[in-house]
Amino acid sequence: MVEAKKKLIDSKGKRLDGRKWDELRPISLQVGLMKNADGSAYIEWGKNKIMAAVYGPKEVHPKHQVLPDRALLRCRYHMAPFSVDERKNPAPSRREIEISKVTREALVPAVIVEDYPRTAIEVWIEVLQSDGGSRVAGITAASLALADAGINMRDLVVGCSCGLIGDQVVSDLDDTEDKEGNGDMPVAIMPNLGQVTLLQVDGIYTRDQFKKAFELAVEKGKQIYQLQRAALTSRFFGGEAVTTQVEEVAE
Image 1 (spheres, rainbow, N blue to C red):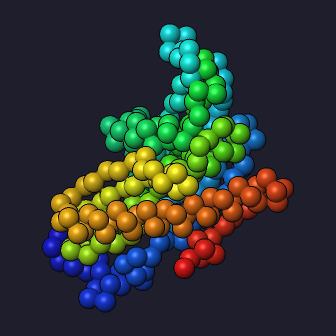
Image 2: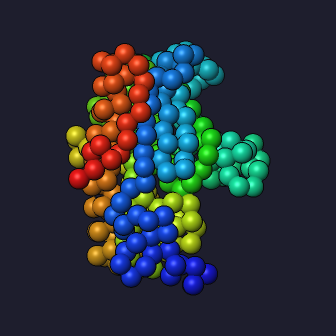
């Protein structure tokens, strides 16, 4: 295991897939693909392929869950059985339940739930192929789907994960780096408001490593935010869903 970790990045900061320590994987976003949903988005981030759909505002079932002064936001993150190398049990796992919870908590600050009392807004995230960082990719897509549904929002939510390979801070860990690296830090932000809606930390960081990883995640999140805006602009002003590549806004 120690040897595997050393091989994930060389002395010049070059990773297994050829990226530098601070580079993102290729990202593409499409909005408005599902006609039967009120809003939808699709993201390809590295080898991740994730669909997000929004239904609502609509009537709440069961009735006892109705909130008289705001909407009930529900989120479901699910990995398809064929999304990983070994077939996954289709039943929700503890990890999926946990990610569903943190996804909801990451999105709630952005949604103006007070505008939709006594209703439910449901967010469904389906991972078709998983390659590390699927929770932040799902949050990024779900935020677009909410906007596509016309839900009133304070800001979009965008996620990015940074972490550690040995002592080196890196951005956007893929599946191998996530499993064999030394730390993972998923972060979600509302860029215009300058607020953090998700911060999770796995691994042991020094103070400087934590600061560097967090600031890098925020920086890359702001870059991905420009992709979200471009995808929405193309959706509503270009007449159809289009693909936007991360290289278009890379510094």
